[in-house]
Image (cartoon, rainbow, N blue to C red; front, top):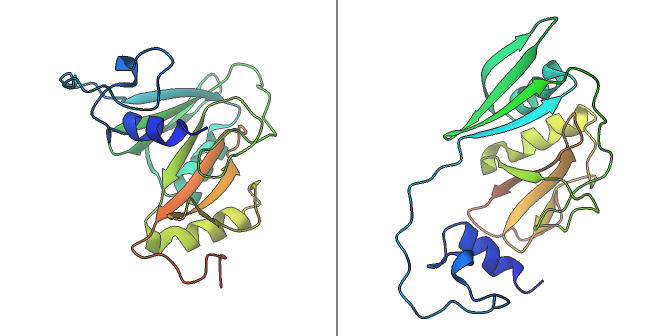
Length: 185
């Protein structure tokens, strides 16, 4: 797993070369050639299906605080769009009931669980993180731990499942490392 952090940094744009530019099997060092010019490509929409658009709107909009862009819940169709700095996360109500996942998926900051599905992280401002944690806890949202944990010696994280069982790491970066890395102490 030594390759994980360099891979994350490269994907986040912190490295100079694309992972695809690496020689096959070599993830240890970047080649010494000049980087290629990056294309202006943006991820704009992520689509999911769900069983209940109201529950998804409550989780992402009211509990986490993402901006709800559009919402419809009619007999024949339903959707909710959630906006985050140029990315729209869109959930569409499925025509028939979908299974709700019960296990957590992999999250780099805490290892996560055995699930092999996609997972994502939602950043919350440091000053709002405690309130978001309490809203999630008080709403009975399934969480991996009873309280946020200090992760990778750099941020607070709290991993939960959304209404469809998608793994969501709710986290905040901090201005200064806390004296005590046990939440609430």
